[in-house]
Image (cartoon, rainbow, N blue to C red):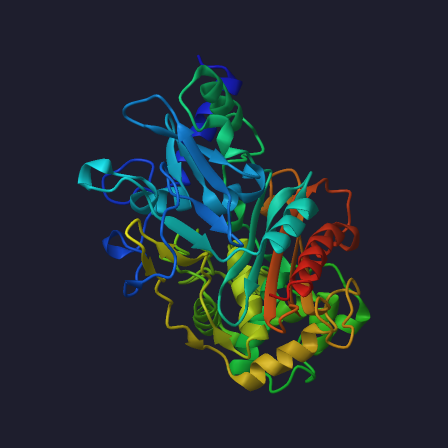
Length: 477
């Protein structure tokens, strides 16, 4: 019988392959843009395309974060190299002579791989939307933790940071030597699952951060006219269908307004509100924010975030109001939620690539989703106002200065809904960059034992967001 360690390694290896879904018939590839192109209409480029022989490169902030060198292998003439590989692995993915490809390396394999047989002696390039300073701030903030961080331009959808922790260096298994195989086995056997892109693929309970969606549904559906209106939310609150009374919370949570409930995470308010809004209308609003979408590409495929549909019991219908009861979300999805609020009710979908330059010099820009308004501007403005005071005292607005967190919401996920025997914390927020643009942030940080309370546990997530917003504030170009 295989040992537990061998079974774990096999399971982890399978998981690593599953995070690079197959598109077409080539194993180890990510789903790519329709027709194998980057989308959009090709146009002459002001760049010269590839600048060297070998594999094409992936760029961050005008600098190549990949490279290549001759491998001596006829089938794979070039071995991929990486610059700051552990910082950018969630962005680039990996390319290995022995273990296939994932991420942008897989999506744009046709652009990045030279094919001398068809007259091409060089390859193209992929330009990402990532801001290197914001990315590094997120990576430094997550060091030593398990989790993910995302920064997204709320007005354009450009992803400025995409970090998953723990990370890995794709250079360590890019070849096909014994050392590469040993590095792969270590990574696939690691219980921290470093090959899993948590920013894009790991969906866990969003907990109280989902209350923003519930509040939006209540305001949009006319259940409440204002974030300052008294709600119908008794304390203690009895779960429908079970009669179980939840432990009493602070007295201020009894019939509290949406503004007060967001600030103090009054679970009774949002459980009662979810039941009042009703499952069909709440699901409809969640879908508008991007939940239950299993076809989102950035262009790497994003894992599905769920708001349960169909006939759910009264207890689960209430629990959904607090981001549990089967609700799950990826960090990218929660950044989308905050971007909608920051952007006045308009949704733009996230994008990781700004331009693709093919070997012949043609430049192509990825297609942008139509987006559009999903909640009223008045609803968005009310939630902006409420979220200015809802970050549990962790952050404060400083006169709208660049980098100051304008509004945010924390969340605390107990072990049963998080990483098994550990608690985790969320923080979603938005701020202004040094260019004056609105940037949405989502951070999920795990690795706490159950003795850490919510107030203390949320601080690491808040600190990561503050690092990213500070870096975005310093961006002037």
